[in-house]
Image 1 (tube, helix red, strand yellow):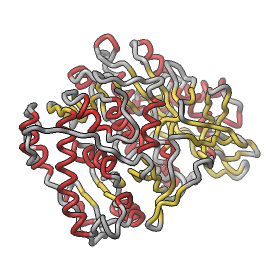
Image 2 (cartoon, one colour):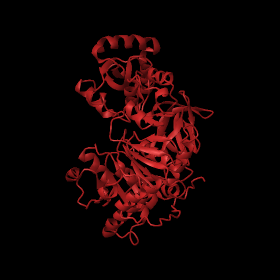
Image 3 (cartoon, helix red, strand yellow):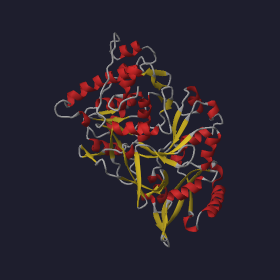
Image 4 (cartoon, rainbow, N blue to C red):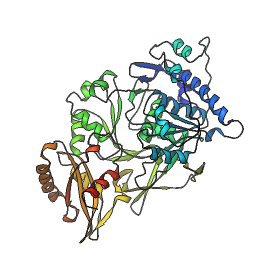
Length: 501
């Protein structure tokens, strides 16, 4: 029986597929029935505190209850995400690695008294004087190592005698999350989605990356990023199993948990490829979804040679993650329920997955359903095949010529020894701006020699005005970080220190 859009997905599977595994947390398994019980118990805890602050039934509509969550990936945060879908509340995850200033800015936008902070010691650095949500997760989770439903139910103070579940209807048009954009140009925007957006995002993703009940999807991206949020809902809607882990991402972990679906950023892929045991024959992996930044030809070739089925992806927070995805190639196909058009070289987006509006001034400012939204990306579209040129806000002019940094970065990544590449403009008295290349090689012991060889290679691949003037080492603070998007400010600061700005 197909899941309907107006039904809570967890409750649906708890009724029709009660013993299917919904969540694997290291060695602990939780069935859909157990997950449903945990959400009900968590909702009771939260309702008590929220009612004490502001009675929902009188002055605060459910859709405006905003749960700010400052936490890393974990079962607690995942429960909060799924509960907000069920309750019609707004799940507002924030990166716990943000500075106090960055957190304060976002909390000021959310303006909510309902804040859960994973590490209580971090609360002292925040300006909010509002009481934080106190959640007894130990009460909910203390017996999760036991498989029996009765143990889970007893932990959550639920009677297991004659548990009869009935369908739980939800309003798919009601807002269910606020996720901040990366803020690459200016202050990040607070993007609001409803469950309908995520439901159709999941359906469209199934076209190229099918998920079924026996599949195991690893949550390797953070829930405060749209990629991580979408991973969870895609998996739950499909009735598959979402995997959480506190351990580093390794080949051994993938093999042990028989992961079938995996989402990776470039740094994660590079580390896995360094292990010769990372190959399709020795794993259960069916699909590898790649996103967040450019991937080198060398690494894509290696991935295919090891037998993996991979998918490059172009997506955005505004479109509930994936927009266009490839199928064992570099050719991006626009997925179902998404629409794209090109206007003056820029990609415009709309469709069933497009966000409903922005949150600001204590309200959701909705966008008309028929409105197209500028993506800020430059590209071309031919018969549903999308090609990405680069970010509009990264383009600069050198001696009267347009420079698109992503074009040069892609050429750099085709050179075998290059792991990462990033282009920045530098001030130049003659040309106005010229090109600085930050580069990370696979072997850091011979940087100068590698730069000379790369310079020779680029001289054969690029016209003169597109060739970098400065070759700079990749910032150390980024070398081992699994970042979803390159933090531009780090490179700007590095240029400044070297007197190139």
